[in-house]
Length: 446
Image (cartoon, rainbow, N blue to C red; front, side):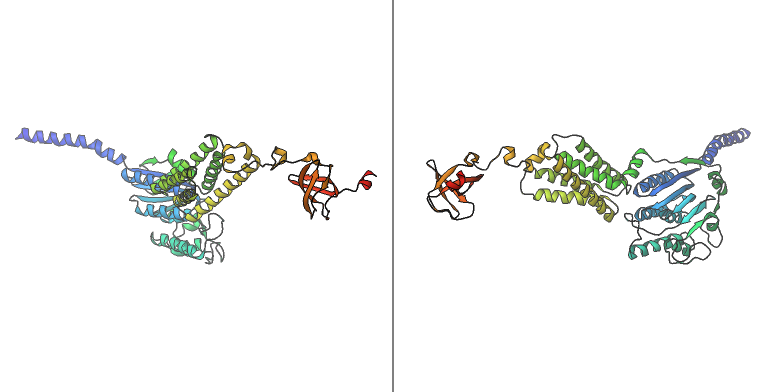
């Protein structure tokens, strides 16, 4: 019996010794993901955040610290990011390290907690047109104000301040947001109990960890991958029209150049980057890429099949596919118009200065003029007849016929009527048009 009890105690001790390392490992495995949100808010950023949040969920992270420093960006991208944050399982702590303005403020409001650095600011969130910088129309503005209010309410924050950040007509006395000015809160103002837009002001990232009991957690920093970096670059609102302009101009130059060279490579590279970035960012589906390929195929077919219908449908398919590939159809339409303007300008320059040297242009456009200077004449130009005399064999009214050394020649008079049998002199030869005037032998000899 004693042997059985002893063996049992030894077994318990063995299990305890084995389980201690695993218990320590579990405690050390508590992770916090550090994700940075900087630069402009756009769909490329959404792809990066989606991947980072998914990694944090799969790793069982206790929290995600979203470090924010942005002037804002696109409303549609901010909306997708806000939705992503609401659907993410771990707690998200927004750390405003300097500024969360416009779309950045909206994103911060979707965090479970907000902390700010001493010089942090949040607000100035009026919606503006990305292409003009002017305020959006009434409907879009109303929608955006409602989104700001909803983001604040859904996370237990006073919606009046969120509304004042997006609506300049609201007078928030005491916060430099009089009527006609947008509300922007400093770190100290946001942390005021009556405001409640910040859980506190922290001096550093480590201070933030200490305040949330995460000082012993393993910090996992996520970085933008090479593919995500390309995605953020090529989906940037300034880069998109540049890429499309390069593609349009490159295709124009390539069509008017012999073989396949650098302009064609540049055009294809620009288009590949455009569709690659928008596919990775989730803006475009494979159906848009297929539509684009069909459009290019129809345009190529136009060179072999007469009629113009294939080319028209191909061009329409290409334009539609590019517009559908972007998250904002209006912005994409502006970008396409810019690209078309650049391509047309390039075509005009090419035709004016280089048209005669480009083989395809010579095949589709008649570049040579059949003028006398180039050695072309529409008929025989008998300049040797100038100054010679003849006799009219028919009246000239003003056209008629003359006889010159036995040769009958159709002529016209210089304007006056000349009777038959009169002496005339040839004064002008313009191709088949020979002009004569009456010749008075006595007067001419004098």
